[in-house]
Length: 493
Ligand code: ADP
Ligand code: MG
Image (cartoon, rainbow, N blue to C red):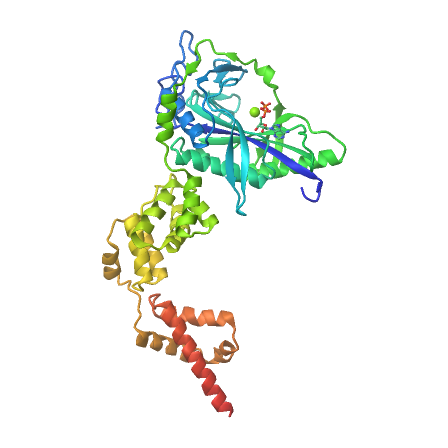
């Protein structure tokens, strides 16, 4: 976009949909826990809009919505109400969606984004409201018909709407990512993007840099991964820039991102809100919310990621980006802190958690188990690397074993013969052997060829089957290089 339109700036606002992990649906007693992939197993009569049925609000969903509002410090409504948003679609059997419009449960507030360069950015939240999810229309199962699965119908959704305060696709991704981290942290939602537990619509337009006006925006619907959000926005910004620079206008429409082509495609003209004919749902009277109910929820909140992040920087001297990455996941942050309590090595703990442990987690089948290494195990592992009992490479191997089992570290080190070899005579012997085997390379080594130096270190480590203390290996190699230098210069004399 930069080349096409350096004078323009992107304006982006997100509507993030979060499926709340309540036991039952938003307005029915049908199960909200999907235990089977078979269609139409968990839709109640209310969700299917049987005549004569009436919706009853799920109190847990309301509680979770308030929990989110309290976490971002937004005002919680003392009375909230539900309205009907009317539109026709086969997977919406009532012909309207029960949503909140004029009296949402959570009012306007601010979400503080943490950006990679260390800046923080205040993104205004217009509102956060509750609504029901629709069923699913499946178009590719049968060749000549659309089939319907109502398992999802009536699932409680929290919709978080931001003001158009985001300025780049990167900021939009950061916002989606951090909102996701927060709802998982608060136990509101599984956060499983692959299952559609969170999706976002991105509204995007371009305007002249420096201008305060908003121009016509396009809505990119149902983005369910960070990558699609970023790519979709990038493509859309370029498309709009091209239109505008050719003197054309951007049309107000809903588009979808097609990952296969990498383009956005028009779905439909965008409805104006009056076309939804919002009106209060007569089946659901306005709900008064007591101050006491709100403060009970407020006081049950765990420490939040932002506060933990700042505390990690302050208390343990971590770099802000390390603290940020540790606090993206509550289990990670808690493991970090519990480990540091036991081994007083915050930098090492952060390294192991963000490095090796995260790498192991990434190779786990989905859904990943939380963490299967206890703070006690990790702290002992760090201690054993620090006191030289094992090398850090062995530590990595050990961590994989610990992930799968509940074994005692010292026991494993002994039985698996993992101890690091810090016997300097033995290390000297290996170094000498490697030098003798590679005499022809010595002149280049002495000239300071970095790669060759690493090759020698690597060869000694190999000879020791990975167990030599790398620190001793370096010392020994350097000593021998000095000696070679001296020998050579006396030869020259
Ligand atoms: P609608 O109700 O028609 O969907 P709203 O004004 O309520 O439109 O905004 C919906 C979303 O669109 C919000 O996330 C908002 O930040 C975003 N938005 C509004 N205007 C613009 C604009 N000009 N450019 C980009 N995003 C916008
Ligand atoms: Mg919208």
